[in-house]
Amino acid sequence: MTIDRDLECIARQEATLLFDHFNLETAWEVGLLLQKMAASRKLGVVVDITLHSMPAFYLALPGTTADNANWVRRKRNLVLRFLRSSYAIGLQLQRQGQSVEQKWGLSPADFAPHGGSFPIHVRDTGVIGAITVSGLPQREDHALVVEALAIFLKQDPIELSLPSQ
Image (cartoon, rainbow, N blue to C red; front, side, top):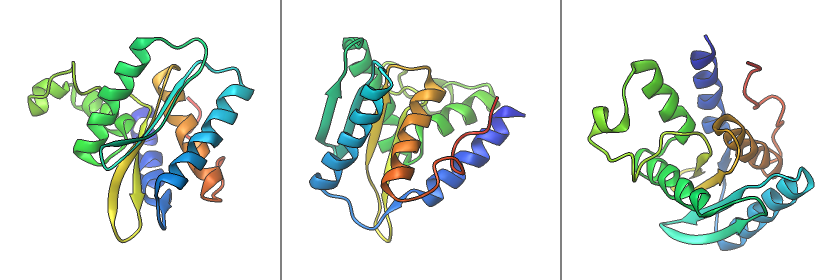
């Protein structure tokens, strides 16, 4: 089943894509990498990196709208609450046939269980923020963040990519 395969892969991504340290300079470097990747592919995305609930990097490329900023906020809220990828949480809810409102009493206006936000996990510290992309289908938003993190952390992006559907 695709959901189970994706969840297994996301668990591996979350366990592998750990930082030894992460600060504002790191946020800038990761943000610029995402900008270069998105611009070279002509992707209309918003990129947001939030560190300790503080904006550390923000970019809106041509083709995005204010709706993308709202999606970023809602997906990021989910990651910062549950310390997991927004795509993993969305897939788990889908498998259970539940919504964020049914399961946790959270408003879907503030919490979006859709792919594209990934926790910034620092080794021996924990999750300190989130990297979020909005503008593509949710699986592709997630994949773009993971690819950039794999490249930045010198991991194999192909080995960490989601399985083909």
